[in-house]
Image 1 (tube, rainbow, N blue to C red):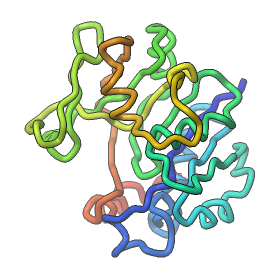
Image 2 (image 1 turned 135 degrees about the vertical axis):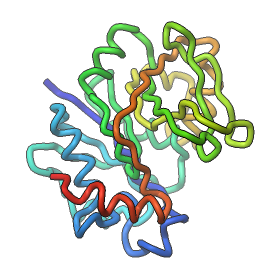
Image 3 (image 1 turned 90 degrees about the vertical axis):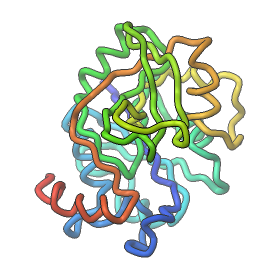
Length: 234
């Protein structure tokens, strides 16, 4: 059975560049090992066997490291020659996916969710989009997401309007290809703003809250913390 994931690994990593400047952010070393390896190994533990890496900035560093296969996982690449935004990047990568249902995640975040539970949740709700949420003490860095009693997404709050404890978008999605109907290949757009926030009132998007371990290495202090907390990852 084919289980596919898209990892968004094409960002510039501006906030981390004075700490890690010679590789793209997902390749930042954790005790000498690329963060992206740790992320892919975690996906493999849930049976993922085909991964499309959406690349851009310093794409050759990723491609030369992984090639077309990493351990037992088939690796494909969807390179952005011009920045496409998160939405355009996902749509570009979907062209290489062989299944209708695909998991999408960020290449700079480790969120140790149970992907089997996500798959079951998504199947039960028959939705074009399921989103993993994570509770944090201060949502002002991220913006927040609200859900109703059935776990359907009911509202979004921007960073400037959000503060205190709450649920944030954890950056992991289970999507159906049909979600991108109406968007053109090569078009630059935001997945968060142009799909999630624009369509949640018209389409049933559901959220799966999780309290699993979460770390975003995109800022220097959390990258330093990852050196200790992820150093034993295999």
